[in-house]
Length: 235
Image (tube, one colour):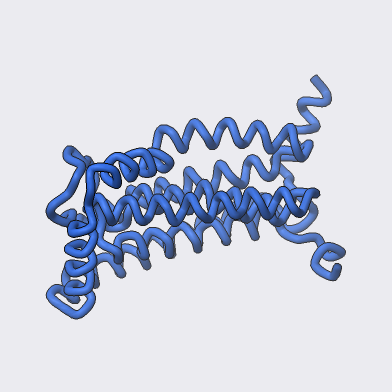
């Protein structure tokens, strides 16, 4: 029991550095700023820059992907999109968090990954609901419950796969293994983005918005919860 309490205390205090209340305040501030900024970007795209050169490029991109559709690619992209289904990513987050704990012998990297995923998902829900952009047409999927900007799949892919890549590159002792994991994660992020645009579920700017949202959030979380120690930064 004492060992469990020590591990829980370690996860809460993370590493030597700023206090937990200060780190929490930084993350909450970043969350609020990101939510406001991305909502502003989304409203700019959908209320001000329509029609515009940006919206025309979005439409042309969708038309190009529609022209490339084949039965084989339709089936393949349906599978690729599953890599970023919300429930699947939540399940993967739990599993990978436990694997990180066993591999690295501590909880802080696991906590960082969970915050990356849950925080991005909440940001997506806020921004997506506020902007309310209609999805492209024609789409291969029906029954979507959310709007188009930003892309939920692309954003949560950045949060999970991108977050995992950054975490292992910073914390894993085996450098080659960390690079291999990060390379796979980067490929997954790109694949999810392409599948969502190919299937007509999002405009390219929806994906770019989700990359911006998820990327800034992940970098912020990792730097706040997993700060480099002085001797590591000087190495």
